Image 1 (cartoon, rainbow, N blue to C red):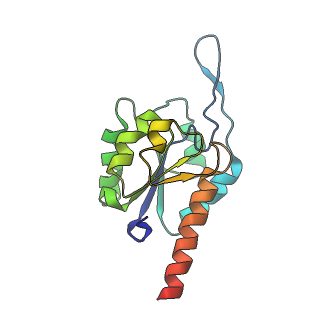
Image 2: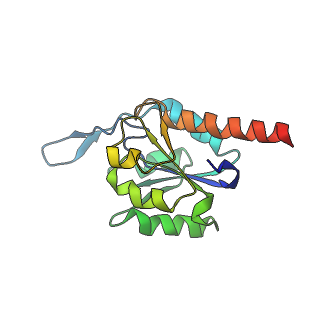
Image 3: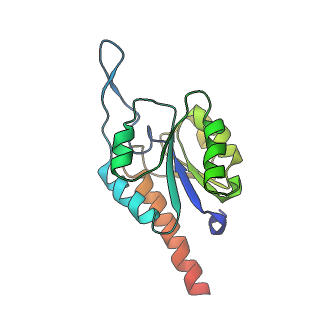
Length: 162
């Protein structure tokens, strides 16, 4: 993995900090989502050294949750790749500077464009065959904690070598 080029971590929400399960009401409204709270702590640690953003196709993700936690959130109504390009422009980077974390079919195009890619153990098979690294953790149980450990471990090794 070429972690030395990474400047931004872009992550899906569902299947990463949630199990990918959603409680739906009778009118097809999202009643609730359960988030892995330790991943929010990991995001804060990641943000000390790298930029971080959520990219989701699900409008039910609470933008106020992200706003309250000071996490950039991008909603992809039509195409994740279209919004992905906007994120790279906003941060003035190229796709090889992106570590992308996803778990679903809608993530594959962004993964193919990114410098480093990761997914959870329970991602769909096509995603697992696309990524650089399958994280040995299921979605909603600490994926971003794992990513944080990988990034900080790499940074510590690199600093020791210099």
